Every structure is written in C-alpha cells, then in structure tokens.
Image (tube, rainbow, N blue to C red; front, side):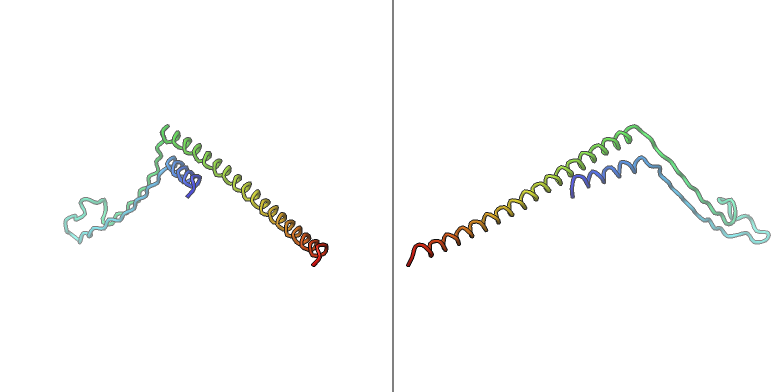
Length: 128
C-alpha cells in the first residue's frame, strides 16, 4: 500500500475523532401486574410495563485533536505530492524508453539496408 493511501486513512481517522459521538439506548421492562386486592409487585419500576428510550450526543473538543488533524493533513498532502512526483517521473521514464526503442529500431533498419546495399554492390562489381 502506498504512503499516500496510508496517510489518507490516518487523516480520515483524525477527522472522525473530531466528530460528535451518538449513543442510543432503548429498553422495555415488564413486571407482572397486580390482581384485584393483591399487594403491589412492581416496586423497582414506575409502572407495570415501562418503556425507556434515551439518546446521548456529545462531542469532546481539545486542541490536541485539532493539532493532530492538522499534522496528519499536512503529512497526507506531502505523501500525495511525493506520489505525484513519482508518477510524473515514471511517465518521463516510459516516454524516454519508448523513443529510445523506436530510435534503436530505425538504426537497426538503416544498418540492415546498408548491409543489403553493400552485399548487392559487392556482387555486382566484384565479379565471380
């Protein structure tokens, strides 16, 4: 995996640490109801059947998390820049190699033609 991909993942984690957290709990408490003239059986609960839903959203802001996000963002930008430089260098190398192969093929064709012309000249003017 490349440095740029790792830095992008670290940046995502640092950004997510700055986002608020959400918790949600729900529960249902069931106790046996009273019959007529019996003592109360649901002492710990507020009613015979109780439904409870609670939500909690909180966010912790501290300067360490913010500075960590900025640091990781800078590292990610540097990794992207290094990847871009490497990509451009690769393109230059491939293009140079392509044209070097094309030039070598032309030189080979020229050398083969010169050899053929030399053989034909030798056969024509050298005699048997």
